[in-house]
Length: 288
Ligand code: BEZ
Ligand code: FE
Image (cartoon, rainbow, N blue to C red; front, side, top):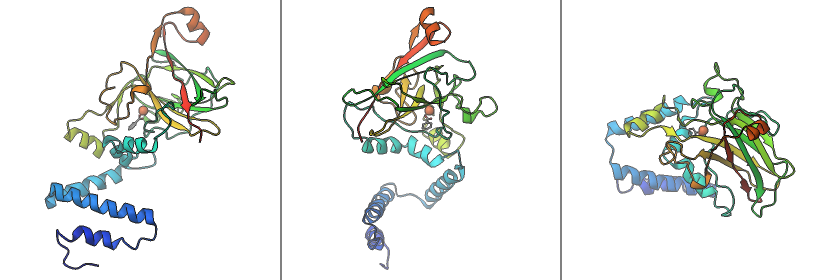
């Protein structure tokens, strides 16, 4: 251990202190963390009061976490770190469906449902039908693929956020594709909504005069045997905030038209009120 820890010797001293870390990956991470963190501190030269503020912010972030609230992931999301990690880990075949963030609302298992079922248990909102196929990169349909979907309601709330108003499982469904790899479910058009702002991350957004909104979307996790699962969303074309998602998770390839269909025959065939909105999302999985 070094003595006379100074501005000049600080970084080398701390990197050296980790040099006997037996796990080589952990040693690399701790060395890099030390170098980058020290470079950041040298760059901003915080006052002691600013350092205390930073510690208080991180403390509050940890204290906000519980079984259903993960403020550190939210912090990672609004700093663009979650999407950067996604991008680094999603260097896949160009044809495969793009991934995006999981988000904090996949906290309960989606109820298994039959193809064509509605995930909207309250019969509110603008009726909507979502169709699609799960295929491999070469176009082969993937029968018995699992398609897990979850979304907020027309007011922008997930079931778990409104336990008094929405039954658990509202806006959620676990579907299994048919022999052609196809899936179909009924729902309502989700709304754009704000990420939770009643914690330190909300304070951070406010301090930066950033809005907390996410464009309207439906979450998907799709998986099939022999294929890498994908965690993604479809975004409603034309939704507000597509250009300024608070968590940077929009990819152009995931923006889908939710077309207005005014056709009583089609509406009756799908079992929805006329007119309704129709979206299609084909999911391409890469073999694992
Ligand atoms: C979501 O889409 O559910 C979400 C993603 C990141 C942060 C907050 C919410
Ligand atoms: Fe969401």
